Image 1: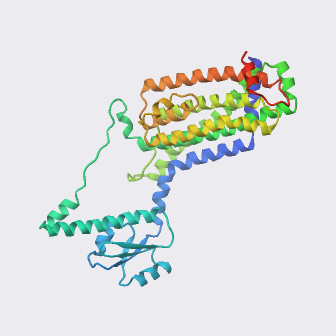
Image 2: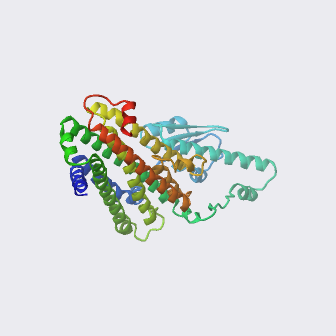
Image 3: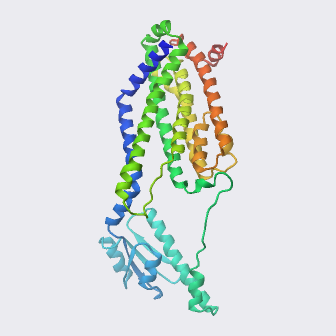
Length: 404
């Protein structure tokens, strides 16, 4: 046990003092502090940003300025000539120019962007409104009835069925937590995996591993490396969580004050707890794979090739989790949330999206613990074999012999 703790302390100290690790930690803490403040910043910037305007040429004579302003976000200024409207945009006096015809419109812009598509949709809705008013009038519907018909907007409410109904109120906050978990897990695994690959290969290339295995069992070396790096990454996550809590509990309330129309992110200690738990389960699972495969290589080039195997699985888990967020109730999501190596990503997404009952969460955690035990056992066997291999590339036969 003393040897194991020595390895853990050494790996923790070495990794935690790495400049890249310190820089990423400070970056994540800054993001955790700034993230909850972003809605407040957007609201403040929105109040001081110059208003967008649109130069409108109405060739139909149907639309009044107040009608255009009701449908289109930029403030409308009417022109009598399309050439003058376009010139006003080119000169910087207006952001867009709009030419309205009987059954079509032309939108002139200086650059494409998401806002252009939004304005295009708004203008199309305005023309559809005009068409409906005209057609209803042709059918003898009075002006008051026309307004009543066209201005109808149904009340909507979203309710979930069963024990997960309470998650609706925190839906948007939980989406943010899901994105954070995926990004943090991928960053942590890439950093930790790269460190383990580099460390193990360096020990083999400098013959340091030969000295280490004479005084410390390979299993303790492997476990110490994984746990030491994992402890450093866990401290990074905890610092990020503390920074986020400070931001949400103290900084945001001061900036928001009495304002009630600004979106803020609420704290969910349950989600934060799951974030830490699933991060640890995911990291330990992949870390054993990284360290074990790295031990079979004597050169950095070979280690990089071996490391592509867990890296591909890591990428697959991240991509699948992003897709799962669009439809967490899809038939393929639940099985993958219990699949080893993918479960840390997808089950956490299901928790955040409110589609995972408690018993499935417990089953997934149990499955991941079993997976860690199996990969730890396999990793120890491969690591023990790898410490004895120098120069030669491992073959599939060598890997099978390691388990005998």
